Amino acid sequence: MPISQNKNAERVDFNKTYAAPQSEAELKVEQEVFGMCIGSNGYTTVEEAEELIEHLSLRPGCTLLEIGSGRGWPGLYVTEKSGCSTVLTDIPVSVVNESKQNTNRRALTNWCRVAATDGTALGFRTETFDAVVHSDVLC
Amino acid sequence: MSGYVIHPAPDLSPSDYQRAIVLGPSEVGYKQSLNSLLKDSGFSQIHQIDVTKSFLTICRSIISARVRRKEELRLAEGEVEFEEEQTKKRGIAEGIEAGLLVRSFIVGAKPE
Image (cartoon, rainbow over all chains, first blue to last red):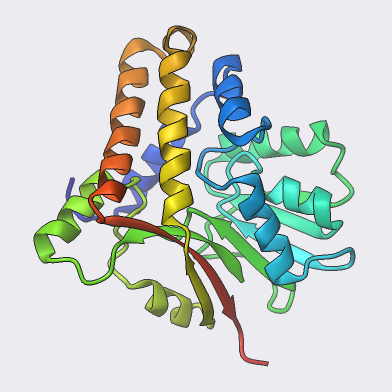
């Protein structure tokens, strides 16, 4: 594989990764590995998600941006646990839609918004967020 | 700013660096170093903790759990896709075990 940062190629890969919603079998794998069905596509454990809350002192009233939120892990968990308000962002529209469904499913619509956007060209005003999280995105 | 980053181990030879890129997740291998990425985003790194051990544990657990559920996963994902995913995950585990891939917990801050 060449060392390449071809954005179109990356997007094709993202779309392949998130082409279909998680199957029952994948959810069972998650349950077994992480101890809960978390909508993950990475390696962040529950304990590691809690580290994010602690290190950023997230609490009600804080506004958090998650870059590369995938299906909503760990952003939704962090929101639920800390009470902060969160904007989940990712590039593929299919996965952003999935994270929106997961937000609804977890009754977090008052705290979470989702947006299809590229982390390198965010359309938010400066000073919008108190904190930023990312999980296996900036590699 | 806080998060988890998978990246090639520091100070690799060019051939080992290339191998880390090949074995790592598709996002690994940004030409800029982590520090320069943070700097360009206006952050300074204040904390970096190596979490590679837990990364390897999780990676191995995923591989084993997927093997245990291979029949269900093959039906859901397709035979070829299942094998591709397993190969990818095994490659990542191999990269970690060979000391080529690491995962770090990063905390950065913007100047007041």
